[in-house]
Image (cartoon, rainbow, N blue to C red):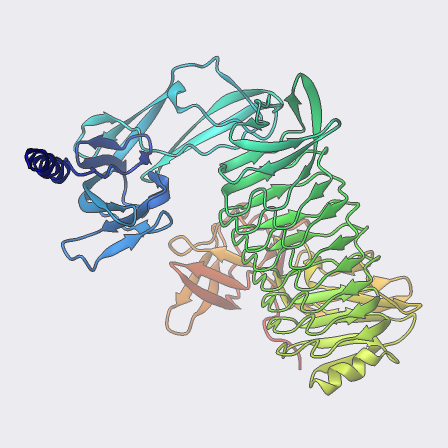
Length: 595
């Protein structure tokens, strides 16, 4: 009995000890950016200006994050990619971390201040960098003067730099509309030494006996220079390939790819939303499918020579992609390569191109012109939903898909007289123009350009069809009166071909008080928008806009601009130039086009 009592007593004691044991305390694991201070259960920072703040820019954590912006629990943002609007003064919030079962909250305060100016002091002017290296903020001190005159050190700023070339490079800092810059020296190429796991600077490589492949750099942000070679186990190995998904979904903004890289893998840069530019090698062997898919900030790209095919959806949904240079080696543009590239307005297709596959340029809503020498295959919906497409010019085609121009309502198709694409275009309700063999055809001409500018050759399309191949020629000559404005005749000539057309050459002078930049007086009628040239001074001064090549010639402008309003010069007083000593001849523009 005694033994049973002791056993029961110990059991009760053990239960009490378990129940009285201190519960586990949840401590979130997170990292704050420089300038953000953690003090107990409070996170605080002082920032310049009132720009919206992305959570990822100051906080990294694997736990779930919710930031409550106000007193109401309904006002919140979630996740690292959320954006918090800020205003000048104290911005008070609450950050809640959660691991799925437990939660922890911190008071969060950001003080946004406005400044008058700031200065940068370089503490270590001897510091040098290698290409692609991150700028060392500890080498400078940034001091700002607030609007109330107080001075304080700024720790929360993002330097602007891209160490992409040897020699002098610029680092810039912009705070609250103020800008300062300074120079640093880049003295070395980037050749990282890999550790035992074949990693350097957060980038993982696969190493073989003769080469290295960049496998994963998804943690990189900002500008990154792919090294031409790496040091592994005491050997220098060339980096010849960027593997599939190597940079996908990273926050890189620019990439320098060395000549050693010959292959870019599938989806290597897909979903890199901040990627603005890529400098490619001069020659490569292959670029994989969806390699730059959904890079919505990518602005321009030059595809290297040696690339014969752009794989499926290579640049799909690159919404900002405006300039593309294609190599002469390119033969195939695969399906959906440029689909939904809304900013793409012009593209020069190479002579060796043989295939434009299904939906290759689908929904390129700003693409206005495409000239193709000839094709073996033009796929389904290849130029569908191209809302701005006006001119599609092509030589002989062999295989045609369906719905090629579906939804491209403005397009006119220019092709050989006997080619099936003309009938295809007509069947889709589009305009079609037959181009005769060995003849020139003028397709597009400029309507207007400014007198101080050169003739806009980019607005002119002159075609020539020879042996079934359509070519946009550029070695023609355009002649027009140089010291004149208004409606004028211009002539295109090429060999024995000649074409004359009318173009408006605009000459606009800014008006200060009542005179233009030459000191000539005008009377302006703000109701009708018309102007009269009243009087020229004794000596006409050189114009800020255009000075004639012919000595003593005065050109009356077509329009004047004053305080945001335009005036058309419709009359010149009879004695306006009687007192002028340096005008021998006056050109008055023709402002109405002959019918």
